[in-house]
Image 1: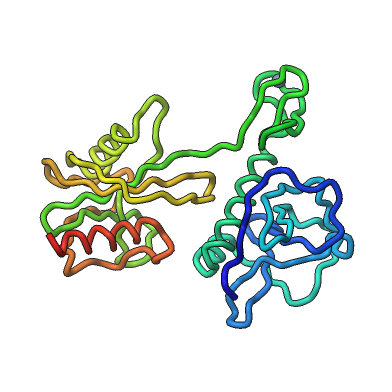
Image 2 (image 1 turned 90 degrees about the vertical axis):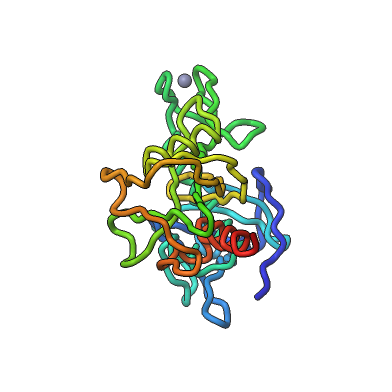
Length: 276
Ligand SMILES: [Zn+2]
């Protein structure tokens, strides 16, 4: 099946009588249907027949004209046969970009709503905001928007070598790039320089933006850069890393799966370095 056309939205219709596309979660697992080739799809369900309470759901938009919701799997749900519970990480690895993106978005929104039922300032219950995708304190009117944590990712290169790192627990032989959360008051450039210095002990220059990827574990937006090595010997931080070293672009180790922006950044940089 080819990926459909998705139009984002945060206000659903007052009544739904037709089938809806569902991101139905049970913990970190999501209910999926299967395409003819076995790849995971988001199920289309009749909310009335299945016992789904869309009032408690997060509306996320329309997929091929069909309203799309994220919700937790109700205990009372009466679901059709043939659906599987799949780990969200597995879905993101196996699903197409559209399915992965919608599931990741729905998961983040549900987790945000679940953890913002009460005001952090005065403790009163929150209610949905009238205009925005947000909740608002019923007493002090403080507004809470979905939380997104920016993560900076850096692939450092020197000549035709890439600086790659591995943490304990990675798949055997697997290496990847440096990454870390942006701190309050920090620019993207400052974060890149700090993270690279802290993790591997080298200086960088000329950061070059590659692209970004939302990552729902738990609520990150990863912004990926390549950067030139500007000085210093590699000294991996033992608190975070098991190893860090230079690899020739002709002899790279095992790398993350192509769905990860880290892998796309490595592939893109490698192509650029080969022709220079
Ligand atoms: Zn309050």
